[in-house]
Image 1: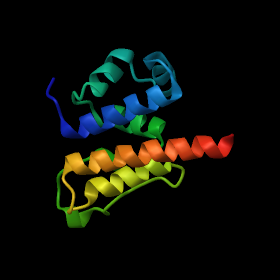
Image 2: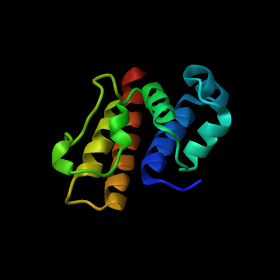
Image 3: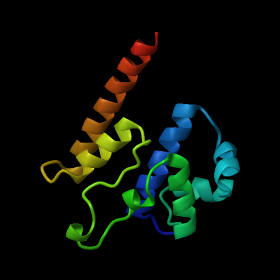
Image 4: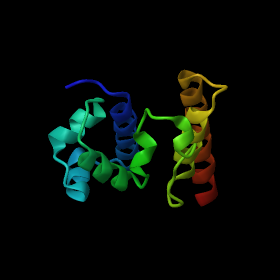
Length: 126
């Protein structure tokens, strides 16, 4: 299957959440009904159908629109997010839409923010 930028973003988000929760793919399969082999392919950036993308986005707690590319940028909101979505994911979406940053710069800033946020959030819990 073809590597796809949309699916790469989805796959990276799934892998990040799985690692954060320390859960195996079979737990994602149980929650979404998506087969382990398909989850593996998506995490590898290979294309999937719209139904699979929607189910996995639902599991992530984000709108599937977050992962779609193309079309006229003026016809879509700058960033679509779910109010229950984790703040680091919302910040990352905004950074990726920032015209002043390259994709690589936006991802680096996102990782810095995510790391700092997780450290401070853990500190507050203690």
